[in-house]
Length: 163
Image 1: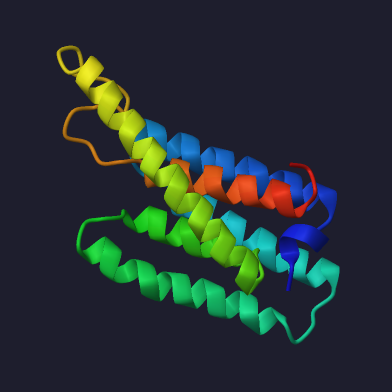
Image 2: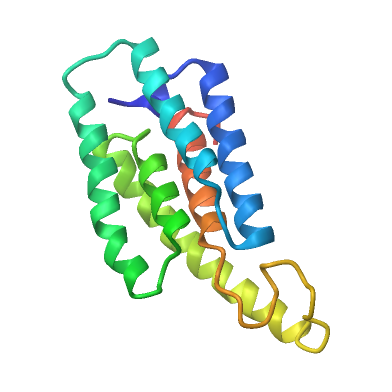
């Protein structure tokens, strides 16, 4: 079910707002609140109800579960935070299988660019990194929630014909 393309405009706006909130949380604290991810998922369920439930909704649930299954070992190996995995899965729920694949590619590209940017910021602020926000704090992780938000928002804008 194409929730990105078919959701009411207000739901799409809230989708973008929640992605921005998750990105800000992850950039500032290197954590994404469960309530933000839950709100994104519940909004997707509401959008599905408003669009009109049909049998293709199983694909959205398969994407959600598949991304959780894919992300769990990445989290256990320390490559992704738990909030990042949950955010990716809840975001993927909004897309069709093809859209989710394109979203994942966009997230991977955004993640690579983000990693280069964060490493550059850490090198530039290495002497004054104490007390810095989570993104540039020395020894901190990569706030992959930002990449998820940017990649998903870019793909959503494209699918809604706005980019």
